[in-house]
Image (tube, rainbow, N blue to C red):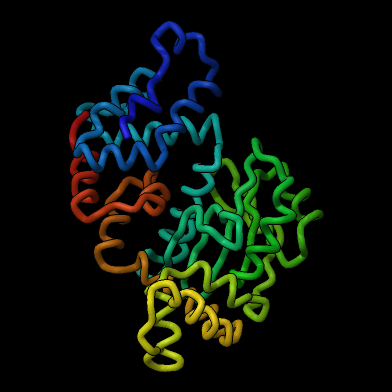
Length: 302
């Protein structure tokens, strides 16, 4: 995808007329999968930096790299437009790269779960879902989202602006915890989450797994299965997977999700990207050559 097709900035006269909020909303659009993938494919971020400069982003250092411009861009968004990406970045940096380690904890962004999409999910010894509600969001869909997450995760939290924390604590299912994100990007627990794997629904877990993951799980439990056509594999393995207990299904889910992102190559890559891009890097599937090109592009002077 060409960045200029979806992320062109207004001309200079229009930029001067923008409010700070409008300008930072435009900057926030550069923290997206299409932009990161475009850089990784080109092996250059010069075109993105040029657009950020038009929006008034100043890296503040001589010989600044593209990574420096992303860091400065994130700081601008963080201070004036605390959108969903700011919350995802806090979860990545405070939980996966702070409280835990990317070697033992796996972060998944926008993970499909039972007809919904959870904003962020962390798997280590347990599974935790984080549904983000910024000051710009509506709370209407929470009544359908959180029940779905309770069928797949040991713990479920809503992460919100401090001004809304007490409201969510008062209206949410009592099993759902509440975290608030303060202006220093610290996560404060307002209400704890009820940890319980007995409510995990194996059918929900099955639909979260990749084909090779549920095949391995069934064969590990019941041994090799007969050869069959591709059209029969899903129903056959679903039948056996649904015989698992909630606890067994949860252990399989945690193991599978951790295996997706905690390999040595994954950890090295995620540790090398700027802090402002960690959540986005977790959300964007890249090949090994693309990862190398992305890191090289970010390191170049802009």
